[in-house]
Length: 258
Image 1 (cartoon, rainbow, N blue to C red):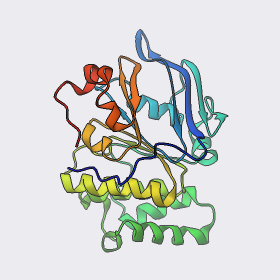
Image 2 (spheres, helix red, strand yellow):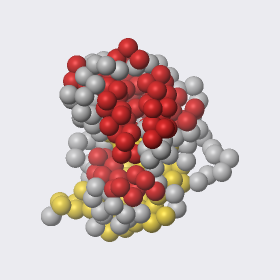
Image 3 (cartoon, rainbow, N blue to C red):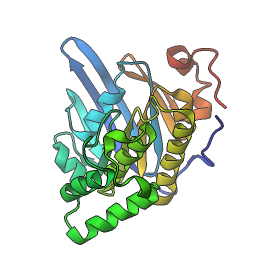
Image 4 (cartoon, one colour):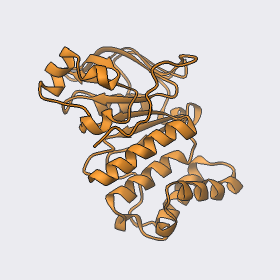
């Protein structure tokens, strides 16, 4: 598959981090998951995380959302120390949206009723709820599916629904966990285009973690490699695949990108 991203943000008129980890460590018992890691995600970036199973990619998402707290270090969101903020405050105050790898919707509700149920939680203005729902149904071309129960949707349609649900609250940051997993080639391309359009049109900062290296690298501006609880390398996709540490830890010698 060719690279679908027409450009990559190499510099910012005003570089401003929206997510920042400062010397963050986390362990479960004697097992160190993250060891003193520090990195930044800038406003408007599409940021990717790669690495073998169990290196802490999903853990980083859980730390950003507040599902878990670090053993040491700080997590800054929009310049504020959010380390001890609970989940609901991070969602409401800092507008962090999350798309899980599995689920994220009500099986027995229709697509429209899924959106309606979540809108009643995240949108206080009652008159704006229907407007926002209609906008997202139109944006993701879901009009002909709105009366179908979620459990009967295809994998790609479910992914569209979950992303639409996460966008109801108009997040500034969107976290996508293993978003390309178990999807066919055409659906992956569709999802890549959605991600890039969210950056271009809605100015949302997006962070993706996935095992599908080529699919992730095709749509991110910056990516980092995690291994053994540490950041091995971080750079643009074209530079990252040439990085000797990234090749040794993750890509291998035969990996080719584009």
